[in-house]
Length: 103
Image (cartoon, rainbow, N blue to C red; front, side, top):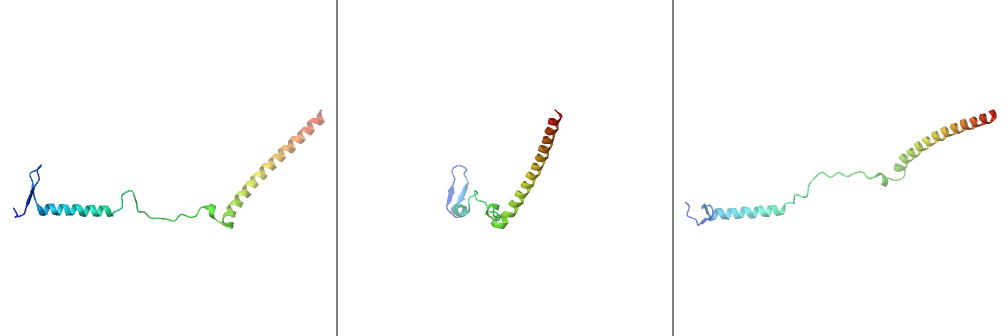
């Protein structure tokens, strides 16, 4: 054995030198310092991408073209429905006139 002071651990009966104990305490302290300097696991690093601005923030012509197209398609649908209603109304009107003449 080396000529160092020995520390006896009472539970296992293993002898360690003072130098080993000092190195162990030093490594423990270094680990605590490194652990204190790192970020906690609740934080994550990732690639940040900038999202395009929402459509509600577009200005003038950028926003009005899709809206005008949607309005135009809705108006075309309404025109078609009104035309069908007019033809049905004319058919009913002529049917009523024919029924009145036959009576």
